[in-house]
Length: 294
Image 1 (tube, helix red, strand yellow):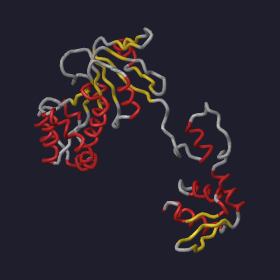
Image 2 (spheres, rainbow, N blue to C red):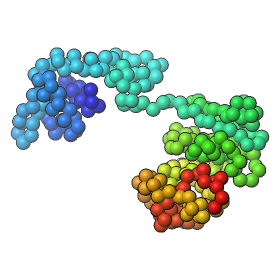
Image 3 (cartoon, one colour):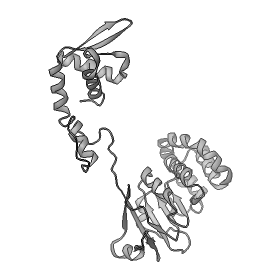
Image 4 (cartoon, helix red, strand yellow):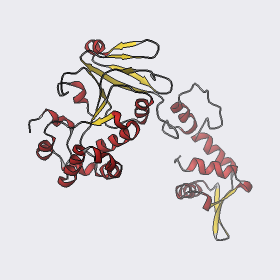
């Protein structure tokens, strides 16, 4: 069953006189009903005034079809049931309706002595955990993991290579590094915004449309708590190692972010230089270039 057909059939069954005006349906719902009408003959489309209506001919066929496609549609679900399991029961697909996972698992590791604290006195020796098992994980979402914070800087990196090997980090200050894997989850941004999590937050993404758009989202929520990190010699590396293919693939995100970035770039002249260079050269730069000599 298409996503449009189930709500259209449900509205038709619940409608007065078992008919509904075509103008009350979306174009995708009308197409779905037309296909269902041809396949089953259980509904008809008739002219009505200046428009048309869909009318039920065989209610039992529609009800049976809905039951087969959504076996638990009229069943009260246990509140403890995961949302995606309930979606399968209602629509045979975990991805119908609200399907985002309630918890997000945040991977983090330490360079040097780093401790994370939890409200109530609990603490995590991140340096020790990193040494013993490679990384730590926080489960965040709802009331889970809300109290964690550290007194040092927090670095956010987009790609795994930067998380695996930390020798690119500037200076020698102890720090936490988080790998967010491409896209910043909204739940992670909200978690960062709920309370101060670190002394400062540095974002180091790919220098492309997606990276800039993610930075804008984060900056709008965290303000001066977060800064955009530019690798040494980024101008030369963009020119020498930059990719026009990556630029084109993320150009839509770049142009979508640009209006929101304008007021930020008024006070961040170096970020402004990066944006101008990317746009004028039609190039984007992946963050692994941090290890290359310009």
